[in-house]
Length: 302
Length: 302
Image (cartoon, rainbow over all chains, first blue to last red; front, side, top):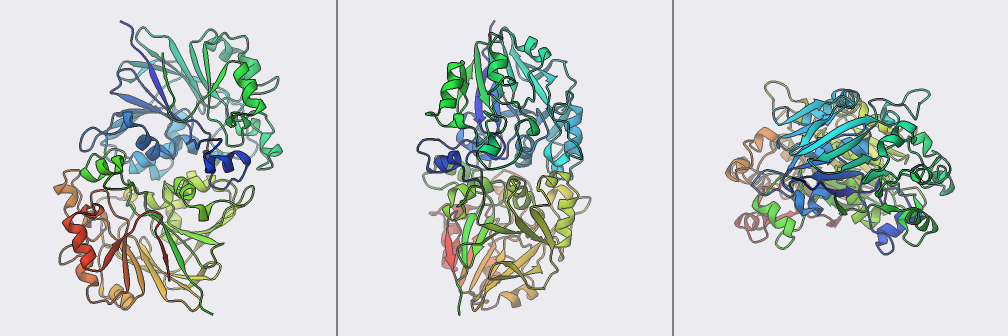
């Protein structure tokens, strides 16, 4: 029997969200007015097979609002939640800080690599998660496991860097190991769904994995590598932040052009990215290349 | 010349907020429908004297939404913010986790006791706050300092406990020291405002401080000490959480009854507290005793 795999975008924006608290760029100003651009919360995706048991991929600092805004994730009893599992794809604050908000004695499992588990265990603040209720499960790369009822997941290395708060000296921004991972998700009899919210480079290895895929959620942090500079809000390039751009020869639009992926959706989109504006040239370019821009509350079924 | 001291309630609820992500109690269900009870975010107060430079007392995990919802705190330039200072009154997650969200290269000062500074420095995740922009200032108890332009603050010990994630063995819930503090705020020529969002006991010492005060924001976590038990959502008493109740002989209503405080406002109100419901008996009791219930966006000027 075929089971449907259902994904719900909880947050489509990168760290900082849209608008970002201290940002007055055109996108953030528009998002505050809510006219041309709707506000979007920070990077997170919820998945389920049976519509009853949900896993959340990355817990953003906006998780309380995200749960509030999505009825599927509301408690149905006095103290409970359909959230049974969490999976972390890196140790960045926009992906792990939400764990602190899920501290209210509800049982769930957290799946993560040994490297990311180390980040968590080195910070006593995460002791707020009572071990009687919340259990951490270290997962090896390339070993499928059951993420939540009826849903198989497998982690694999993608080029990336250590979290900002762990950077020291010269930072290697395209390490391949356990600090940044992608996820393959598959329900019984279903096609695969791929979730890769952070990726510094589309390697040949990664290309082979994604070839002919049905559905890929992919890193859409910046459109151009130097976009923080051109919008004058910062000096870091996309590459320095561990994210490949959409545009250009090394970009994801070009990289995916011969992969024959049925449905490609950008997630983890920075507030500076011009694709937020539906009327922008850049939005046209990505849409003409067959990409969709994720938005909070978007649902996709495989 | 008299300067006005202005306070803006960013979040009136205790840790977990209203609704809390995994709570199906009557208040949380009502807050989700938004009919009888409006949703409220987690504990935080913004203060200013000149309407330009703001300090935030406690940074809740909801700070991004709180800034978004209050135009006074929006950036006016490309990357800036009227938030110049932060003050922390304890190391609880609902008061410190928001710091992680303010990590975007905006300069501000964080004022806190040595005990709370230790909590922060022991958690490398807070390295996300670039020391080139964010500076931590340890403040001694009972020594006035300038919190933000034109505003003097003074910290004093109130009975409380260490943060949940640092609890070990038998927890003393009414320690008086640097782990839980209250704040006295005063603009030049103005009356004093007092902010005490967590308090385990109204000691004689504390009563003398607050006698004849013009404005007190006070710990309104629970109405009854055993309310988590009677609403069947948990087993902890208010006392175990380091919070005195509103009601009863040891409660704040009774404790304040002979203090002649002009304006008394409850903040840090737990989602289980029956006073959220405007039609409740308990709400009548607190209002008849001259108390107000804070709400997100409430402004008070001294």
